[in-house]
Image (cartoon, rainbow, N blue to C red; front, side, top):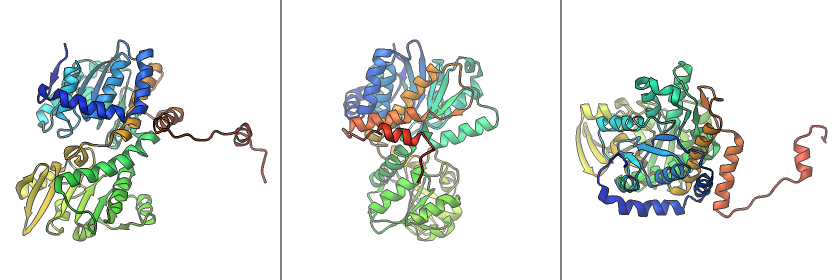
Length: 416
């Protein structure tokens, strides 16, 4: 019997249809699932997940189960669970914990529910599962083969743990896969962030000054998509290199306090906290829209807004704040707008990311006891395998090196 805590089991039928649609668009992961079903790499193992409970995540869950794993999954964000998908997983016997709009108490209770299954491998998005095990369940550390981390924010936390000597089992930074950050972060975050803001506000992007805070892989994707919709994009950065990249890409770069005065839409994608503070918000024009696509809800000072200004819910996932004589609009409570107000990344891009998660778990099992308690990047060969699987799914063929070319690339004698 499975254990679950979800919104409504009667939503399962619609959830199964949505998962079916996702599966059709995730053919690279389907090939891994078929191999796992034959080879059973996770037989006898329990995999605990704290991920966004979406239709795409459900396909990953099915892939792990096909490989012999017992799975327990909790939501990794209070607004990101797709309730029909959670119901579908529960109806299929998966241990699933989460519902859209859950409070902080339930959020951490659900993390604890996953930990109660005593996982051998963890898969995380944001590092809360890993952090909870290290702080509250140290008795489980010797049992753990390893873990995987999906997102930039989580990898930042993991490196901090490693630097402090606090990390006690190997964790693969799946976010560092080229097939993750160059595709999921760039194309996925770019498209889904704009999608979330549109669903929350229905604003016109053309002609607007869109301020993108942070020009990492996610920020680059958001800026590109906003530009494609006719926006005037302004980038704010603390990194000289990334600021220079933004300038070379044709974007205006300003300090936040200056951008605050002219922006119409503000999007944070930094992985840091208090990026947009009250001092910036007070400088903004009437009617501006604030949105966050970083993992946690602290990139915008939502606590300060709630403490100091009158709030009114205008429509689902859009709150209005009266700041002096101005109206400021916040999307999805300052949480991940692409999952809070929309459906997250498209299935096609999540296929490559979840190929990374699935193969990372297999890599941990194959190298059990050989890996240090550190943050690990998967070998390039696995990244290349994922890219090849996705090209096959898209029915795209590429060239191969000739023997002469291979010899040339591996030698040094031949010159001009």
